[in-house]
Length: 91
Image (cartoon, rainbow, N blue to C red; front, side, top):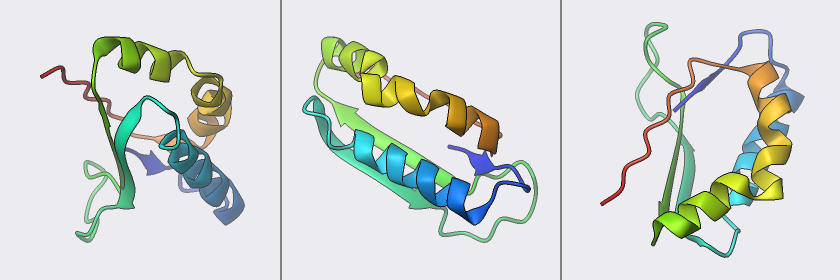
């Protein structure tokens, strides 16, 4: 879950969302969703965007985390995002 910084341009937002959605095309990803929060954001503790991905095994998670497409967006994403929360769950 994350927000963009207030000064992130529309182009930076679009570029980052497209890059994040592109990661859902990786072979090890079973399901992938990148969507805006349906609820109105009323304060800084809420996040505007959510990314949810399903991977079958921990080896797939490791491959996803280390994929060049994943690593390539980090700098741009970090520059334009705020309030990033990761929750990685193994079930």
